[in-house]
Length: 183
Image (tube, rainbow, N blue to C red; front, side, top):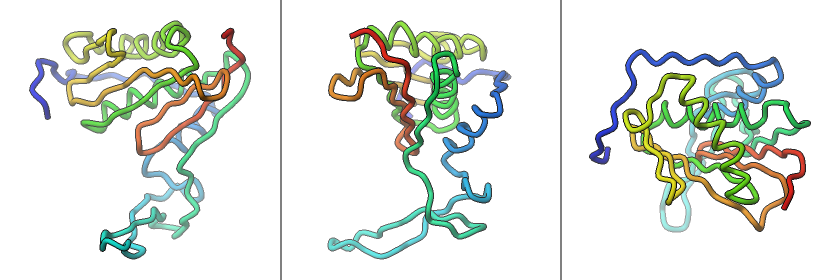
């Protein structure tokens, strides 16, 4: 862990009550969840590449399925909670796993700062996390760094689709289409 002055929160209280539809998306976003049976995922050795490096594939320990999603798509109308569920997922992933890099993107940084970035900051506040104590925001770099060195990075994706928000941690990625936004 890098040297920083940030501290983990004490008595962290997370208030999160997803709707049934949001909960279905939430389960799919978990890095160790089999959507077929709810079992735990393990990495199994499937062979070696030309350089002798081991190659692995995810497989459910319970049902043995290897047909597991790596990219999760969610959609719906405005106000359906896509940005909220994605933001909760990013923040909770950064809290649970140290030293990960998560990305949140929209067509422009302006639209990101006016929407999902505010949602992320609201979640942090609602959960009792304190800026400059548990996390710090660097507005010039567009980063939010947690006490455990996990980082959420703001990105624009001008080459991506119009009105699409991307959220990812490297463990799972979500693409959450949103209503068309003004260019």
